[in-house]
Structures are given as C-alpha cells and as structure tokens.
Amino acid sequence: MMGPVLLLAALGGQSAQPARTPPPIFVPAPPTPTAISPAAKALGVEMASVLNSEELTLKQSRKLFDETMPKVLAANAEYKQIEVSYPGFTAHIIAAIRPEAERSTIQRLPDLWDRLGALYARNLTEADMRQALAFYRSPSGSWLIRVVGEGADFSKLVQQSIDKPDSNIQSGDLREAIIVPGAKALTSSATPAQRKDIIRFVFSPAGVKIRRLGPAVMQTVTAWSNEPQPDAEKVIEAAVTKAASEFIENADKAAGEAPQPAGGRRAAVSKDQI
Image: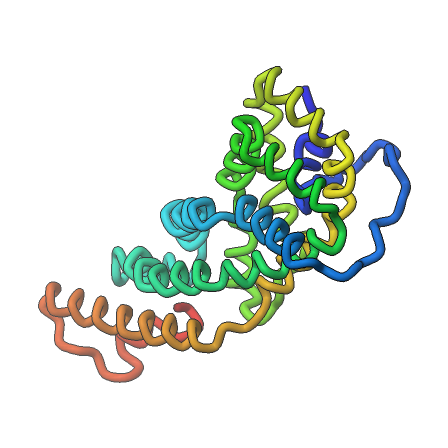
C-alpha cells in the first residue's frame, strides 16, 4: 500500500505530513523566482486549471451543500432549536445560500488559476509543466485529481465558520480537509497500475519540483480563500434574510398562527444563528 505522502506528492500542495515522515529524499531548495515568459505563464495557468477545474469545484460544492452543511448544522444546538419550531428551516437557508456562493466561487477561479500559474511558471521549466500536464491528463493522473478532489471533507471548516465566523482559514485547515480523506481514498482504491504511474511521476524531475512547491501552493490557495468578498456577502445576507422571513411567515400561516410581534416566537431565529 502506498503512503499518503507519496501518493499526494503528485498534486503539488497536496502532500500529507503524517506524525512520522521519512527523511526527505532530496534537499535542494526551491528554484529562485525568475521572470515569466508568456508561454510559461500560459502553461502554468493551464496546470492550475486542470488541478482546480470548474467541474471539480462544482462537485465539491454539491458535496458541501448536499451533505456536509446539512450534517454539521443538524448537530448544532441552535439550529436544532430552530428546527423544533420550524421544521425544514435549515434546508431552506442552505438552499438560499447556495446559488450566490457557487456563482462567486466559480467567477473567482480564473484569479486562482492566474496566481498559481505564476507560481508554477516561476519555479518550473516549460518542459516540467508539459510533463506534469501529460500526467494530469493521463488516466491515472485524472483519476488521482478526481479522487482527491471529490474525497475532500470540509466539515471542520464549516464548523469553524459557525463557531468563529471572523476567523481565517489556515493552510493546515485546508490540508486536513483535503489530505486526510483524500489519502484514505487513494490508499484504499488505487490499482497496481495507478500506483506505478503515480510513483513514476512523483520521482520524475517535474514531480520532485512540484512537491517542493507544495507549501507555497497551499499558502496561495489559503490567501485566495480568505480574501473578503463584500459584494457576494451582501447578496448572500439579503438572500438568507429574505428566505428566513418568508419561510417563517409561510410556516405560521400554514399552522394558522398570526404573525408574531418582536420578542415572540419569530424572535427565536436570530441573525447570528442564520
């Protein structure tokens, strides 16, 4: 069985660091940044878009909204209280958040590709990037990207956003969300042929350089994830407020209850809880 370090090293920025990590097999420092040619930048952006495609992002979003958020909120004490009075409220709010959250994320992907593309282009040769792209587009490389991406578990990040809404994501948070579940899926499902293909790439000149770039890649993704999106946040806040108000009003009407004054039953749902 292949260990997560070896398997995930093929996806720069996604190499796990378990409690006992074997000594590094190479020691050179990452290359000194150099000027970027248009051709190199294009290859770097292409790499970034293959590793972080719109299709994969939408699959991760579906898992987040269909599985992760409902599970986390169902265990939350405040949402449990709301559900007692208004069954179905949580699902309604999640549905209200989803359209703008997905739209804004997809809209921002080219910016992430550009940043990562510049990082790749500064530290990899064009030959390195072509070799990496050939692997990522191969059956084994495509499988690797899909399994790691779709296996991501953002439960703790969702819980963190509830417990500490003003806190930033740390690179370690992203590694834990992607690496731990991804490593389990990889080690349990990779075929012998896939393992060989991944090993060959990891120990190739391009694979070695990409592994060394891992921390810088994670820092870039973390910074991108933490950037404020005031326009999207306003749209989401308005959508949630409207959805909550309409849901409660409709539920009260269906139950034959009159609208509640401030401090009454309707006050059970606070802005912080939403």
